[in-house]
Length: 357
Image 1: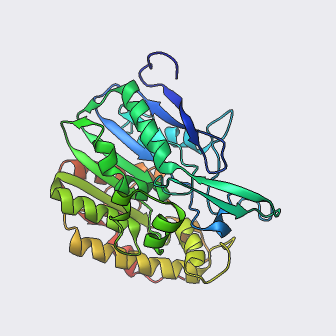
Image 2: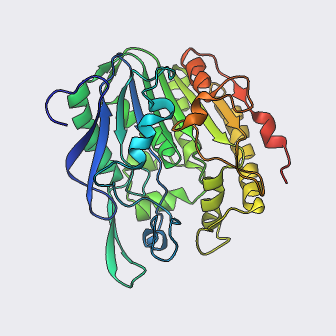
């Protein structure tokens, strides 16, 4: 990013002092849109919750491609971040009704849901002492200030959204985000495929040293629910909420096996039993939202990624799933548009009742 941004062009924005979890340089991404609306979109990229997971990022030496979190931003290209700009809610394709929105998109390479301020020591798989930098909150706060300086602070409609780990970030950082903006129109929070069951109070305090106002949001073992419940309690139906997930999510089923203590590492493949457990957890999560956040929309879908065990795809807002109906009367995109207009609903709930073999 140098000089004034061109409309419709994506820019990387470095932030002084910002680092990824491995200590390398961190950056964010912005796009100046032709509309007066803004999307703040948090990316996924896994979790590190202790010294064991810190030593096992993606593409680790002992298990190529299998790991708990993304530890650095790709150099030369933006990797996952560039792919996200071409599909889903941020796609430049005119068939996407959000294609002309302004976008603020922090890279996610800190393993801490963008809410950490800590540094922790661990031993890597080669026996070397290393430091993991949980600087997600510091990075995002500084980047948001810089992005607002580039794009401005006054907008009409606002969506704060994210997928996978970033869905939790969107819920927890909504208030930090709007505190830097002047929004005259509609407001919506989108939480996509973000069901992680953990001892969050301990992780936020002891591992990530998250700020007190974020720690105070944590009430249960489901942090994404806590985030949207906090928003509902504070703002009621003035902030629309969309919660979405596939019924037997591959990645969420996979990592939950470790979080539940059923294995001492993340499995390389998802078993039908793991998907069954996740489906049950998702059913409980949706019931809790229905009961306690009645103005929220819920969108569920069934799209097979692995035939054995009927394991379904992970995330919908950052890929082609976004514009497809996925067995429902409407698409996830239409669900978001409806919610912006105050038309809430629950789609795909019947998938939770099915038995998959």
